[in-house]
Length: 261
Ligand SMILES: O=C(CO)COP(=O)(O)O
Picture 1 (spheres, rainbow, N blue to C red):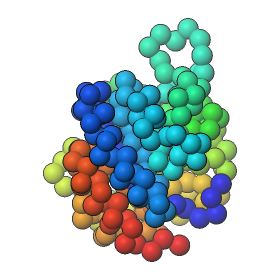
Picture 2 (cartoon, rainbow, N blue to C red):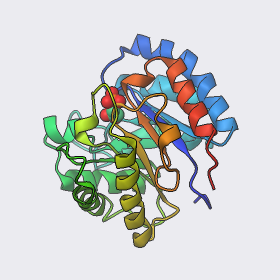
Picture 3 (cartoon, rainbow, N blue to C red):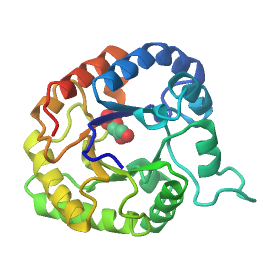
Picture 4 (cartoon, protein in one colour):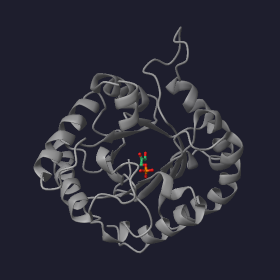
């Protein structure tokens, strides 16, 4: 386990890009990820499942790159093998070179009815395989005056999700207020900082001060990270505003201007 928390920036392509477009995106993304890694910033790219193998071939050529310039999956099942038609095995992802698995994104919880229990089983199965779970958490309703409510809501999601994940296993929590996903602007920076500070306190009190990182997602784009408090927020989780690779590069540079412990 690292002795300090490494800043990180991840990007999910959701179901936006065809495999051919992902391949083109990779040719711009790979050098950006390598340069970020050279200055101590971890990156991960989460393409659609059909592009996971090609993304690993481009980004993960050594064991160290599995996490440093990693590739993620958008979901996984909680069993490694068997008669589970249509599901994706954590063991198979590991074999391809995958380092991260996104679990419990708001869209999966809402559209595919994933429960907190499903999230917990998937997080435990991913961690057991050595994959870093990227557990998505976030309150549903917009009420920026209710910081305590948002913290409590997310704390419950955290406690449920990692109840079977060992304290020394790395976990990334993507704090994505559901009301801020798919919008023109992210949540207000003071609000993000206050909620993440509450979550940080909770994770530290659990004994996850080194192993758990918090990244913010939800219409995150250039200009946001410079306003965020790095004692609480370790990085960002990007959606649409990273579809232009130069935007992703700008966000890496913004993270690089901060002085992480
Ligand atoms: O859900 C997100 C990342 O997983 C955020 O997506 P957008 O940045 O496109 O709102």
